[in-house]
Image 1 (cartoon, rainbow, N blue to C red):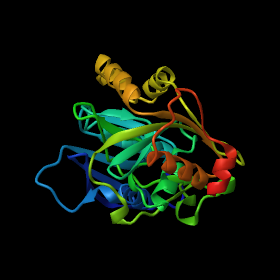
Image 2 (cartoon, rainbow, N blue to C red):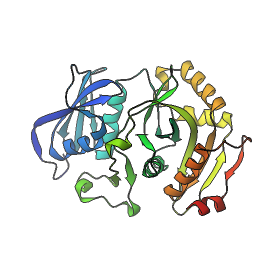
Image 3 (tube, rainbow, N blue to C red):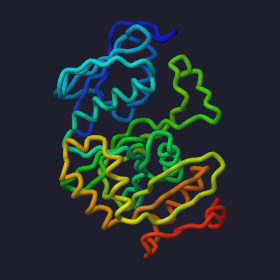
Amino acid sequence: MPRGNRQVPDTGFLVDVCGRIAHLSSDCEHTLRFLQQTLCHMIRSDGPHRDAAIRVSSAPNGFAVTADAPSPSRTIVTSIAALRHEVLIRLMELRPDLLWLHAGAAQAEGSAVLACGPWGSGKSSLTAALCAMGWSYLSDDIVGIDLSRKLAVPFPITPLVRLPGGNSPPSLGSLGLEKRQVALRPDQVSRTPAPIASLAFVSHAHGAEVSLSRCSPGRAALKLLQSCMNFADHGERAVEFVCSLVKTVPAYDLSFGDPYCAAEALAALHTAPPPTSEDGPALTSADARSRC
C-alpha cells in the first residue's frame, strides 16, 4: 500500500453504470476518497439491486482489485493510474452490449462530438475545454455506444487533465497521480444519450498551433476501429456500425497545443456545415489564432 494511504474499516458506495448498479468498496482511506472523486457524477444513494461488487484492498506495493461480476476476477496493480484504469474496465464490463470506445465526448444542441485518440493525446483537455464553453459532459476518456440506437451513452467519470510540468496536487501526490481532476457542476454533466454529430481524431503537442482538417471515411473507419475497447464482443456488428457512421458524419484530424483554441475551432464546425471535400484544410492556423 502506498505511503500515507491509511487502512480503515472496509466501506463503500454505489455507482450507476449506464443503468447497471455496482458497489465499490475499499479498506484504504485515500484510495476510497479517490474513487469517490473519480465517480462522483455516477454515485447513487441507494438502489433495489446490485449487479456487481468491486473491492479495492491494500496489497504489497500496490492494490488488489476484486470483482464478482460479470465473472470473478482479482488483479494486482501498482499505481493509482493503473487502479483507475482497472476499476473503469470492471465497470465497463457490466455493459457488454455497448461498444466501448477510447474517446472523450461532449454534446451541444442535442448532438455529440467524439474526441478519439490514445492515452496522452489530449482528449481530456479538449473535452474539459468544451465544457468550459458551455457544452455538456459525457466522458473524457471512455464512451459507450448504443449500437441499436446509434447513440453515445454518458460515462461521466471525473475528467483528468495532465499538469504542466507533471507535478501532482497535494491531495493526490501521495498516490502518484500526475494529473489534476477537473471539477464539474452537476448541471454540466449530461445524463441523456446523444446522437453523434462528428468525430475528431486528436493529438496534442506543447506549443503547436491548431490544425483541423477533414479525414476521409476510410481513414476514419480504421482509426475508429482502433479505438474500440471491446471489439471482440461485437465483431462484424462493430465494423458495420463504424462504416455506417463515417459515411454519415464528418470526421476530422485535430492537432493542437492550446485545448481552448482547439475547442473553439471544433465548436465552430459543430454549428456550421462541414466542408464538402473529404480531405483538406477545414481551419487554417490564422483562423484558429483569430478565434483565440
